[in-house]
Amino acid sequence: MMKKVMKIEGMSCGHCQARVEKALNDINGVSAKVNLGKKEAVIDYSADINDDEFINAVTDAGYEVVSIAEKKGLFGR
Image (tube, rainbow, N blue to C red; front, side, top):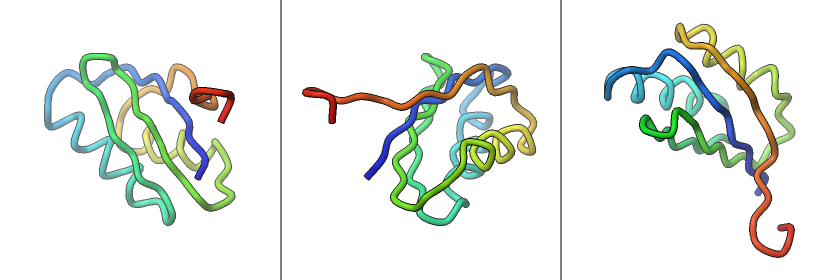
């Protein structure tokens, strides 16, 4: 399982959070959780998915992707 963290601008309420979460989770092989307070999404994915797919999903939902990076867990896993 791979993990990425995406910083997102433009979310202002629970509806925004749910919309972004749905857009990301609609990508096959993705499980995403959006944190409105941190303005970020933590994306777990198993398939070989290009960052552009994540970015396009969020942009198409009407929000701005500020950054996307691999999330490193403890011990570099």
